[in-house]
Image 1 (cartoon, rainbow, N blue to C red):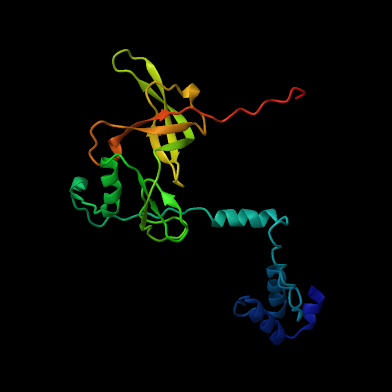
Image 2: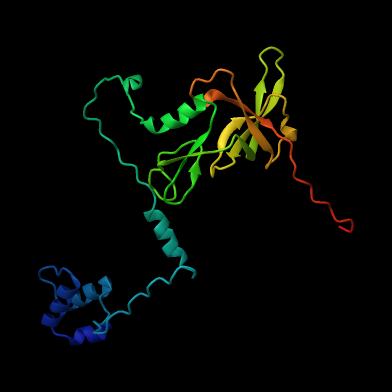
Length: 244
C-alpha cells in the first residue's frame, strides 16, 4: 500500500495492521508516525488470500538436480565430530594370549586317519553332492553340514597358480617357486599345495596333471603330503591355422 492509501485508513486499522505485522508502536504516536513506521518496516504489501505455490518435488534419479540442493545435501552429510569429555580413567592390561578359542576338529578325524594310511577322502554334501577336499564344516551352497565320506584319487590338475619369491639363506639368491591350487579327481574344490622342487614356474600351467608325493613317515596330518609331482600330459595342442 502507498502512503496515500495508508493515510485514508483510520488509526484503529493502522494499529491493527501494525499488530499483524509485529510492529511496535511507541506511546503517543500520531497517525503520520504510524504510517511512517509501516512504510519503513516494508509492511506495505497487501495480505493475499492465495497460498504460495508449492515447491516442486525433486525429480527421480537420473535427472539433473539443482546445484543448490546438491550443495545442501553435501553439507548435511558432513561428519561432525563431537568432543568427548573424559570423566574417568583406569589402568588395565589385556593379555590376549590368555584367551582360548574352541574349535571342533572331530569332523576332520576320518580325513586325518586316512592321511596316515596314505589315502585321500573328501566330505560330500548329501543335498548338492559336492565333494570338499579338504573337508568343510558347512556347505556354502546348501548351508548344511556335509556328512558323507567318499574316496578321491591321488591325481588331479592345477586349477591356478602363482609365484612366490624366496631368498636362499646360503647363497642369497632369489628363488622363484610356484604355489598351486590342485583340484583332485573326484573333488569339486581346490587344495593349496607345492610342486616338486625341480619344477620351474615357467613350466607350470593351468590344467597341468599332477600326483601326490607322500612323506615316508606319515603322522595323520595335512603335512603328510610333501608335494605334487607333474605327470605326463596326454592332451594334444590344437594346431594353428596356416591362414591365420
